[in-house]
Length: 400
Ligand code: SF4
Image (cartoon, rainbow, N blue to C red; front, side, top):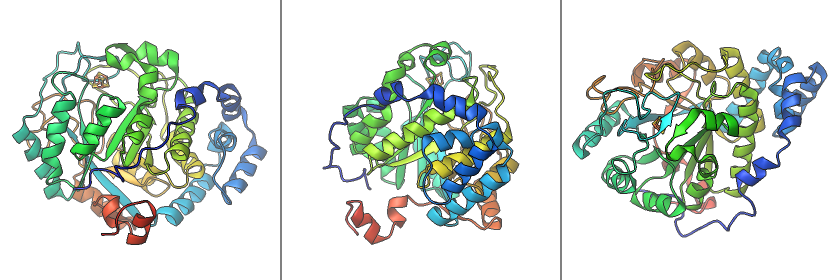
């Protein structure tokens, strides 16, 4: 079992954290550009995109309403770049919820502390049963999720579950409460090789308004979480904003792209992925502050690809089959399939409450079949196992 990338290597202390870099990012200027850029500026950005990755100014330009009018051109450029960098492959993963217990109040989440939902934390045996279900479906890459409950789903709980799963599951990532660097190191040593931390919203005031109680109220601790995970030796770090929390999706887009660029520059041994989740209905009954349309989402995916050519872009089962099928062809490289968003949901659906309503209800087999019809090969294995030996040597891993 590979427990992470070259555990002997610890990146030097960064000169600054992303929290510090974000503080001095000219957000007002970039936002203004994303709202008002004209046709000529979009032309220029599209021309530039043909030759090299876009800077943040050009990225903001492509997010503009004028950029949205050129969606077909954006999609063609994004598709060509994705095929050139990733080929016709789609990385498959599955979420496995270990628990929906939570001591935190996020106003938008179906697991929030006060909600009278059916709670459940999987036993060791139930965890293995869920994982084996996913292995039988073909998955080799599993994302473990929990709410925030220090006692029920703390580091010891996660270590124990990861150790047991690592004997059978080739690639394990976590999307759980955020931890210190030492705690991430313990989880990496147990067999975890990826960490996903959505900032939810990069806008500090909005963040304070939607995270009312619990550990997650600490905006900056969360913001710098991906850096702690990378420094602890995690092979993959995923970031993203939950679109619809803040009233301007372009703000979230610019912040997310800046965050990804920061991480890729400082932690070049860590693979960075970016997700573009939109709000979905849940037991919380929360309504998004702004509607992010399907076209907005497609525009965002294309602009991210042109600014971050080598970054994995992730789409989950939050989106409908028709939209997901369209996005597969213009920039997405990683997808879940057949997902359940409740603990125990693969073996015993609906016994516990789900975090949000899944929109793509197709089975993994159906999604894989559709991908093949679209000309893509589903890749189920951990990337480390399929990377050519020479590339693995280049990134510091033994070739065999
Ligand atoms: S988003 Fe996470 S921390 Fe917030 S209520 Fe939901 S499970 Fe708990």
